[in-house]
Length: 77
Image (cartoon, rainbow, N blue to C red; front, side, top):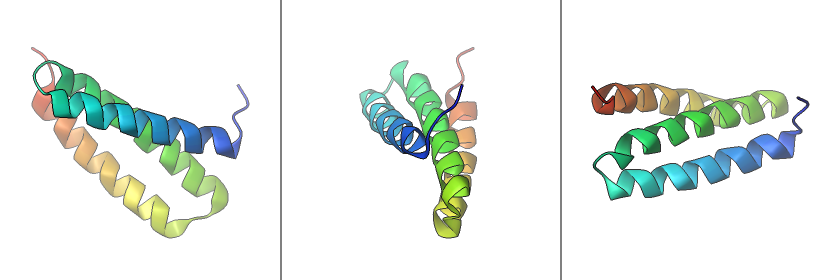
């Protein structure tokens, strides 16, 4: 699948918005919110890497770490 740079930007934005909504709902939705954040993080890391946006890349990698912590804390089971 050949994704364009703008596709990563759109995916990152939409997944981040959906993730924040689901996280705000709380409860069982929180896990799905963190998963959306993970998708958003991957998209933003890809976008920043392709465009050589070093500061955005650094921020997105840090957000990946906080997302991993959030996923671990809300993992069902």
